[in-house]
Length: 322
Image 1 (cartoon, rainbow, N blue to C red):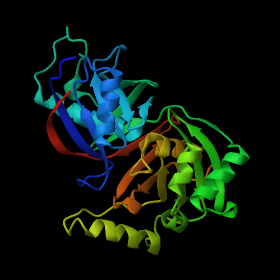
Image 2 (image 1 turned 120 degrees about the vertical axis):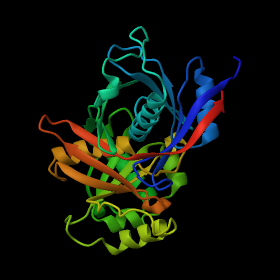
Image 3 (image 1 turned 90 degrees about the vertical axis):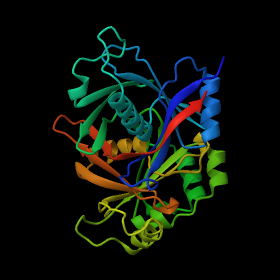
Image 4 (image 1 turned 180 degrees about the vertical axis):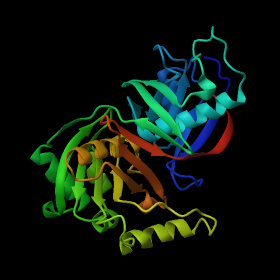
């Protein structure tokens, strides 16, 4: 296959400030690329995810998305969904309006408040609300983890069983072992054995709730985030105060820890809201231990649909030879 220049963006997701969120590589024209070529490029970028936008094949979809980690393809992921939609919308704003004969044409696109993404889990709705994009969380399948898996993971994390308030296997495309821990300090001070986690070969998401929205930030979180955030200067905007602290360990994807994880936050929200462990609207913080300051906005509407929202900012635009 002859390589050619293709439009490319690198987007920071779940932040309004460049370089404080989770970066995403977006190839805005993936037409004609083989699976091997996509995987090779994803390994080269070495970001947690790299996406390729393609013409839709399902009625009602604006575009089709394929999502690759350095270790393989994902059926769905949250920060690639928002970041790719952000890059696609920017591209659409630069192009002439589509004709009705074009396969991706959707009437009223310029005024649309809802974008529909096609990916391996099906059609995912994305809505625009001010400066944020929000995706409708795919259906969650959850179950109790096996005791042997839980024991091995806790040993690798350095967490005592009495520090675990609840646990579930969570699947909305990717599968995570979700752990609700006793305190944000436990989450932030954790120093996992990543080699042991790689041997277990299972994605793990850990979270802990702050006591109330109105209380001052806890020392563990504020000190870590201050060290990360102060490096970016006094012009950085005020962070939204978080209700939940989250970390994601994703060895099967070829990355030790993911900075900010939309799919994990989606499944955590569906689990924790349903079981009454978190309110129907809250803010999650993720990335402090990696020098990031991601914010994910979770909300369950009157119909029971969980929406996962955040801001995106483009950091790099250009062309890539693929």
